[in-house]
Length: 472
Image (cartoon, rainbow, N blue to C red; front, side, top):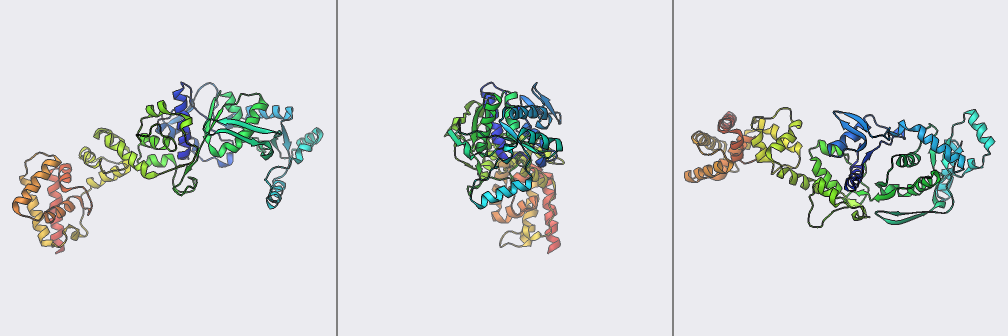
């Protein structure tokens, strides 16, 4: 599933590509077949499409299906195995990579001993000592094997676009597996071969890949490729400063979309985690984010994810949408729109946080209330008899009301009537509101009358009166 951290990385790459008149590519890296999830590729492509990220090259979502565009495909790594095998063959021939026939059991034993001795776990290079004849004999026997990178001595250095100068001693590097026993490459080999083949100029990825970058730089050099620029984005953090993990809570992008967060609100929120173009504002359009994005403005430290801010942003975007736009956005989430849907949206848009909340509200208005506990219609120290009397008088008021069907007009007329008759406001408005909504907490009775219309409002009040009379 596309983690919101992955969405942020994709957005940064998309912003940079659009800002520099470049191309944004969507390539699927599926060389670890054990972790493949059914429908995962479709999920990633469809989710990016939902938030407005459409690849210039690679995989795109079109008419309910995945298609490829571009002339450097295929864009799924499991379909590019011949390229990786050719590259690793070249590395072996040069002496920059070697066959390893060690069993998993032996590797586990080495690692356990190193950990016990407080040594850095790494391969002991036993198979590097094999002669060409030994290697040939093992291959002829069909002994399972991998191909490892031969890490050279020295130091690896690069100038990270976000972090500045970074260096690693090559002595700290393990002889990374490049080609696994199943014939698939590891990420390290495949990403270098593909970035070169697809003319990638800038790699933006999470900071957890910093320790792998030296291995990639070695491979670029060994294969005679020009290395791209690297920018390592800091982690997203929980409020307690722990890593925002897929295992802690729901952090899938599609989940937030399905829960009713607007795509542009989610894009705005995720984009500004650790990056804000200006200090005097929080909300940006996609075009503004593209225009003002700069990798050097991305903070080096981890960004704490405050989902309350996402709620606030979503409310801001909802409130500036027209009633028609909001109704169109929520329509896929409800089975049937009530006939008063436009009025409900007009009244409720100031209160809701997500489209799902609005969908639930639409359903609530469309279902007439039932009163299993009619006592909820009684205001504080009043009683059932008084509630019945007040509701009956509200029916009379409604039947005689000829003012404008606007919330303010209904409210002003009813409050004037209450004052004129000398009624206690709570004794009238509490049972009326509950009679119309069926809820102890809801919109005002004036809003309900506006939404339902006088005739439907009278029917609901009469139902409440009957419930009170039957319970007495």
